Structures are given as structure tokens and as C-alpha cells.
Image (cartoon, rainbow, N blue to C red):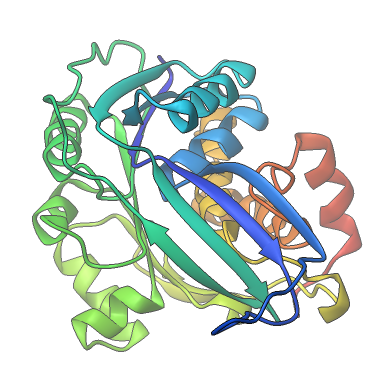
Amino acid sequence: MQALFIGHTYIDVTLLCSKVPSGDEKTVAEDYAVSFGGNAVTAAFACAKLGHVPDLITTLANDWLGRMFLEMAEHYQIPTHARRVQRSSLSFVLPNGGKRAIIRARDDHYLEPFPQLDLTGCRVLHLDAHQADAAIHYAKACRQKGILTSLDGGAIRKNIQELLHFIDVAIVGERFCEQMALSAPDTLSYLKSKGCRIGGVTLGERGMLWYDEDGVVSELPPLHIPEKQVIDTSGAGDVFHGAYVASYLSTPEASFIRHFEFARAAAAFKIQRLGNEAGLPTLEDIEMLEPAITPA
């Protein structure tokens, strides 16, 4: 095991349509995609596509959607450690003008305890704060072993404030700031107070505000992608997380600005494709993309 990701599995159905019907209306989508979903889960697939296949602890149901997910994981050779639930979770994603509406149906009533894994060889733990008991258990274990811990804090979830005490790299979203009633700069101060060595707030099309290993706050500007090329922003943050983990695994001696710049290019690739799987870049995709795009 070189990395461990822990999260909640969705099957994402992404529908590209100009109008969402209501009442007795019907519409025909222009395009669609069906793929794996979930924050840490999508990040795990992105990391695998970039050459560093992680282990994955995630929810799994014994139904046809669960079996479809296992087939996806097998295709990417991701060792999956299941935590059983009764039904698979679904997410319906409707991209629209650089934004996206999402309808979710989730089963997070676990039928068993989380798997206990040997962390020998593990170099990174990435969490999205789902499976709160597993997240805190492995975050504490990794902190004790000196394994880098990373958090996708898109929103406030159970135990997340306790969890932050054991996180080295905490990247949160604007929703997290809103729920905490804090500005982005104040959120960075809050992450520092929790002991997070590196922290950031992703701001969508406005890039990211973050602080580095020395505590210096700076902006990571977005990459300019022509508006007509932006198809589906859903999952871009997850790809960003998976990509900076992959970059760290490749060059752990590099500063995090380099890892984040690499991840920024990966996210720029994602938003130009429909669905999570189509939006996973290879190393070659990022190498081709980086020289061709500049900060906005």
C-alpha cells in the first residue's frame, strides 16, 4: 500500500441538458455520462490514473450498482476494502453554465465496522470526512507513523473539527467557510490554529487562497479555460485532490506549490469533459495542457 483513501461511493449520472423539466414536462438530454462518484472515491481514481494506485476504503452494497462500481475499481486495479451498506448511493448531476445542480440519494447506515488495514508502506492518507469513525481512526494512526494526512473539507461533516487536529494538508471549500461563518482568510487562520501544516480554500473559478509550509498566505490563480470549453465542473475538486496526492507520491521533496500547480492543470482538464471518468487526465494530458494554458 502506497496510499489510502477513505470515502463514500456514489454512482454518478451526469445529464447535459439546457432545461430541467418540472410538472408534466419532458426533455431529452444532449449527452450523458455514468461513472464512479464521491469525493475521496473520485480522487482515488484520479490518483490511480496518474500512476499511483491507492487502496480505497469505501461503502459498497450487494446490488447491481455495487457490482458495477467493483468492475470500475478492478479496471483501475484499485484494491477496494468494502464497508457494507444495504443500497448503493446515487448522484444525479446537471451541469449548467460552469455550475452544477446535484440530487443525491445516500445510504450511510453501515452494516459492519470499518476494515482494519496494515499501513505498512503507506505514504499518504486522503479523507473527505465521510465514515467519520474510520477517518479519525486512520488519521490518528497515520499521524503517529509520520504518514502525510490530507483532507478534502468541502463541507462540515461529523467529527471534522476533531479530525483537523490530525491533518497535515487541509483544503476546504467555500461551503465550509459559509458553515463556519468565516471568510476565506479567517478560515486559513482557523486551519492554522488546528495545526494543519498546509491549508487552503478553493474558490472555484477564482482559484485558491492558501498558505504554504512556512505559513505564508498567497493566491493560486485559476487557469484560463475559454467559457465555451467548460462542460462539467462537477468532480473538478476531487480530481484536484487526487492529482496533488499523486504529485506528492512522485516527488515528495517538492514544495506544495508544485503539487498544487500540477493539480490545477488536472482540474482544468476535468472541467472540459462530461462525467468523472472522462475527466481523469493522464500524465501526458497534463504535460500537454500545462504549457498551453496560463493563469487567468
